[in-house]
Length: 119
Image (cartoon, rainbow, N blue to C red; front, side, top):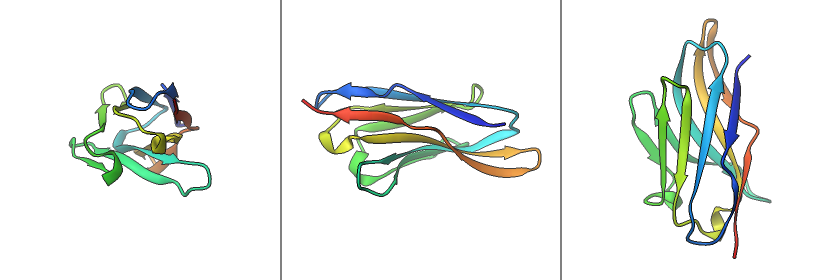
């Protein structure tokens, strides 16, 4: 069974930083991509950032220049460094992994970690 476990959320003041981490566990062949979604109250879930197995990254416009996604595929982990956080970044952040298993390709979402930006 594949599991994604996130950590690193919390409360931070505007302009502050947080680092989210995600660990993929289970019998996987390889990770294809990893990413982070977020969902604010009353809003749809949105894709924040992704990173492919080749290292290519993509970010939603609102976080470009402030957030950095990184991975260590040897350890099946991904991180999201979030700098200059703003109140509009407040949301539950979810780790996402697209993985290959011995019987096919599957997509998984973590349980989420709360990020609150407030003074």
